Figure 1: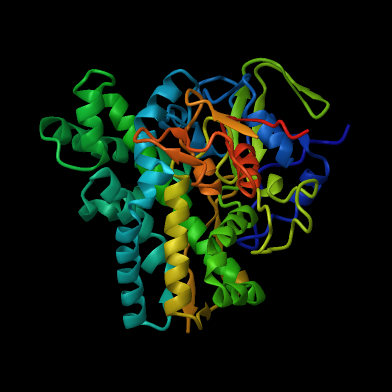
Figure 2: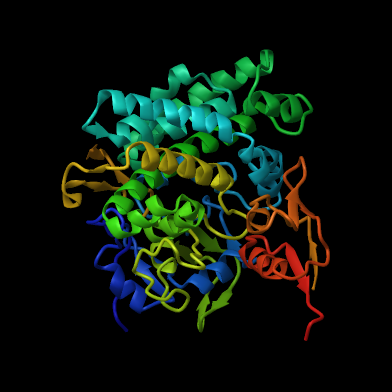
Amino acid sequence: MTEAPPYPQKRTCPYEPPAGYQEIGERGPVLKVRLFDGREAWMVTGYRESREILTHPNLSSQRTHPNFPIVAPRFRSQIARSLALIAMDPPVHDTYRRYLNPHFSLKAVRRMRPELERIVSGYVDDILEQGPPADLVASLAVPLPSLVICRHLGVPYADHEFFQDSSGAVMLGTEEESAKAAQDLVDYIDRLVADQVKNPTEGLLATLVRERVQTGDIGHDELVSIALVLLIAAHETTSSSLALGIITLLEHPDQLALLHADPSLLPGAIEELLRFIATTDLVATRVAKGDIDIAGHRIKEGEGVLVSGTLANRDGAVHTRADVLDLRRENPHHVTFGFGIHQCLGQNLARIELEVAFHELLTRIPGMRLAVDVADLPILGAGTVQRVLELPVEW
Amino acid sequence: MRVSADRESCISAGRCMAATSEVFDQDEDGLVLVLVAEPAGEQRAHVRKAAYSCPAGAIEIRSDDV
């Protein structure tokens, strides 16, 4: 029996899997991997198997389970283990999700488009005024999702730097930094919710106060935990997808030329970028609450389960030339937003932010190129959101 | 082809409506609505894509064209 390979591993190129994932993929679609703390967990690397296991009734998100797999020290914190929705199973998960669905549905998000276009246009005005060069992380990829989620929730944008820094530290800091940042966020949101309960203004928080807190459906602390997850989830993932998407396009000039020639390719191109980049590396962390038979393996009750978006999205059993970026790919299926009942609540908001941002950059800065070698863009975050700290471009 | 959707399992991902807004819509709760129960012609391929993309398995297709 060969030893379980270590997981996660760090990418060296922002959009390519680490070299060591080749072996993991070859030993898939279901295998055991070894985590940093020496424990082993099952990993699913196949696309079809990912869909199968993510809809299996014996798969649980209860992070308080003693065997729940922990992929990095920062995920050991109490707050990380008790996140609303993400760390929950039905029925409470489904109840919360129903409260939020109307505010993140495709239809609801499409109504936000004109405002998103105004916001992005303003950022690109600033970029053109101040550059070249420009750092697209600081000037677009970080502030855009931040402003959008602040407005959607109805939280003061004046505090956006606090949100940006804190949610970044939660996802990517050391164990201590992550726990402290999460507690700071909880304290801050606690005060916001208290203000809204006294005097509901506008935005999703106020709506949830009126529709759910004042009716007695949920308590103050539950709304705080929901708001915390919305803020964290909205910041890091979209921001990184935007930055990595731009890098990927700039490093594939033939594909970028297709988009310049035919902007109507953009929605499909975004799906292919989401597939190719697999921003979060890992798309699910779970524990089996009963035996699960999959791909000839039996995952036993109490064993940890991970789903690799990076590998499932490049499954050769589903995609031809899976390692090639092909913006015209007919079916760019991916599990970047997960699958099953936990599939990303904000997926449509993320898609439209990416679409509006890419469209604006392509049309207004058509000659954009990387100002540094892609190898000089350091990547943070193995096994979670893949992030570049800066993205210098010129034109 | 007949298509139906289970609003109990719907999670408002909107993949159906993204595949074809001629056949699928979302109500004010974000839940799926089937606009055309018997899609025809080109719509059928979009409906199959919608059913495959649905993360909640909420879309059922009964095909009588065997």
